[in-house]
Image (cartoon, rainbow, N blue to C red; front, side):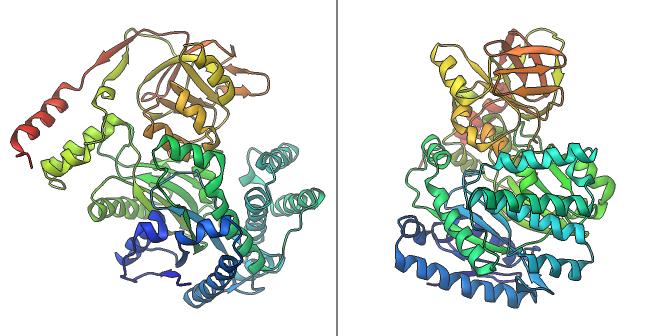
Length: 528
């Protein structure tokens, strides 16, 4: 089986239909000379055979992984699972069309106990080394072994509380090592065998990523997004770069322009001393671009220049994932940004005005836009918000509070709009997103995968509301001291990030100036 190598400076272009959009775009970034960690890709055509358990395909998988790891070892000068210069890798999914957060990823693969000692030798940073092991156990345990991820997060929360610190970043090396060993014990207590041989780890991880193609949330998303014609996912294996190496490191997501409002300014979220899943999973509330401006102004300038360059390279607004490792910027992914209908209209007009698109090209790009959804809702009166969060998808939504997808389906069946109120943003809630008029979360950021899906569906969304405490099992929540029960009315402003109790009155505006510009293009562009 031929695998595809991706390395800095490689110029060959590859089809998204063969290696997935994520890997194809990664190769384009490498060809453009952007800082991309080396990677290799197992093709989409292997997906169905692996899912079906075909023995010949399993052998091809092993051969491809063996060849690919040798390529990464040569490219990085590190050895997979080594006690001195260990190579760790991420194992990522990637279909021919973007499915944000719907397929699985396994991080820090190869972080055996020997590799932990190697990371300590290599970096002189034992807390970092044990943190990589802890992250590997959680990622492998939940994705490959199928252990409920909340079991890991509960262990972490219990230790943070017992140590009397505010967050996991404040745990010392002894506490992180103890937490890691408790994770391993939990895995063993559930009668799972955790391989400490790196090739066994990566083979199992690659099979699990291929199998995630058939998960319920992936199937639901493909149905909602009309992607049933896709044939599977590729598997991209990439050398890890580490955002969790200290306060001069971090992970983030950036949009070259605001995907909610269409404003021509970057939107950047970052978590320092963290890895990428911390941001995109919605499990933590990130900091904004101002945090990078303050602590790493050179990186901030480089990131903005890269965003502008990617817009020109791909001809569209980009959504990128990046890592800062010890003061160096790495680009891990880029794709066309999911956007609200309002933002799509604004982007098209701005790209024409900036000379990046012709009016004809812009009209083609707007072909699938539902112009009936371009109305802008505003609060008709002045109301006092009960709480504030971060606006993640613009618009006004009014609905009855629901705390899980099942309740949302039940109440929506009665004819009332619903507001999905969750502790965090999770792509597992995609069915609830489709039903809800709007979404509210207690934690998470505007660049999390679930916030992307909300924008794509045109659902107003407010995330990171610290005044909100959700009791999912009890079907209730507290918000700024008020009690919120299932079925109570809520109103949100997804642009301002404000939340209101009750049903607020809403006025509707048409984007008349923008629509007039589109009509002018149509009158001036000759029909084919």
